[in-house]
Length: 176
Image 1: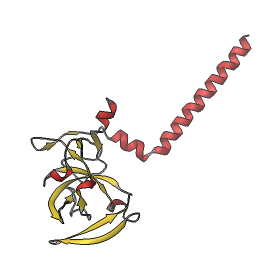
Image 2: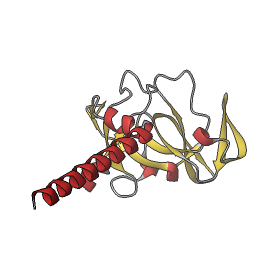
Image 3: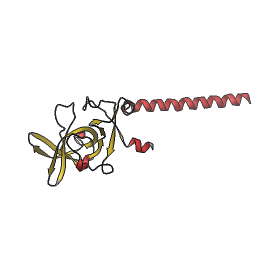
Image 4: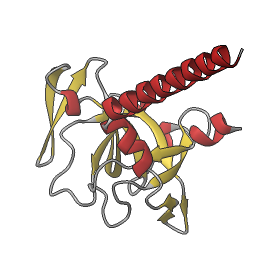
């Protein structure tokens, strides 16, 4: 049950979609190729896609495509990060579906021409409003950004438990 719920939640990690969603919000999503066909995504839909441009130094820019007044990169590589943004344009090039995507709060579109197979999730909406649970995702963000702190706390907990057990054993030995 927990796995099913967790696969339908995504954490917003920036304010690029403000005011629709904010950093720390949970968004409820559908999963691609299981609950929807990425080729059926429409302009206005908010999607989660595997973005190469966020790790552009670790991926390869194959070529640049001009679409109207927009210049978009087509990347290869497996170093991607999930990005939650809105589809602003849908294109068909050589019988393949592509999307131009933008964060609502960003001044410009994302620099990558996104293929349908990069789209992994679509935000569920009710009457056009995304299904968002505010602030709950901050715990996840905190844990990811402060892994070292979590490790230290766990180590201290184990050390405390070990010292406590050692002391109890010593006290039991003294009583005998």
